[in-house]
Length: 385
Ligand SMILES: [Mg+2]
Image (cartoon, rainbow, N blue to C red):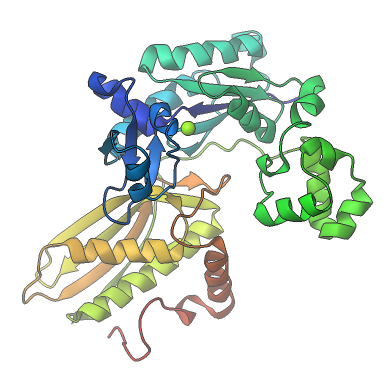
């Protein structure tokens, strides 16, 4: 029996929530993101996209392109609340809900026909219920696997429903540019283009043996499967309350700023390593500080996008520490770094500040030489204790 996977993608989610909560913004360009000098756009409403504003664009550029837009900082608590309501709707159809980010989720509907009726009708019902109950637009794709379901919801944007049946897979994929398939990055796209392969249809014409001679046996076989829309990856329901943290109580209190920062970086590397081992990304970084008088503070920050990037996580931990009140005479007795809001790393989002190569290199060095083999951003000789 074939599988049926549904993918829901909320349209311009953060901006749509702002327009929902402030009717004066409806029909207006709205840009949500970091408003500081180095900020980037998280989400632009469709009205702002008409001016060329895109996600991940520097905010300064967005301001030039669309100065009349409403520029707003993200309100993650509110987005999370609404994302939770989307998940509630989805989980009334199947327990297998896999949230990918605040605005996207997969739902495995395989075998639920007897309970809910024909799945094409279920998809239509979900597509109608989300905007009706939340007041927010969404796009929905239904297909035999995750790869195709995600491509189907992309094809449905904005606001549509697109179903790809088994017999439609070839025709659906053929006209798409190859870089729409996940795992095909700019470099592979360029190498394929040099060989006259631009669309998935072109890719399907290439023999498996030829693909393997171009890209090696593993990547070649992978591309061959992608071209046929083959994807066996399961929908994995995530335990939401999960978090990863590590803390250390020091035999002697820490006083020096550099020593504290270095310890936070070391802890951040350790938790980032565990995050990567579990195949997860974090959306929240927490720092715990216990002073010599046993007062304890926890500070946390929501990241603009989920990450497992050790440098980003370490930087956030140090910023959280520095943002706190002055500590006067008190020493630091305990430090902890925690990661929460964990989502599966199925779709690695664009890292806006650093390259995934760097992350891989850091994880590799750490797994080979141990957790203390690498420290970040500090000169040798600055020892923690
Ligand atoms: Mg979206």
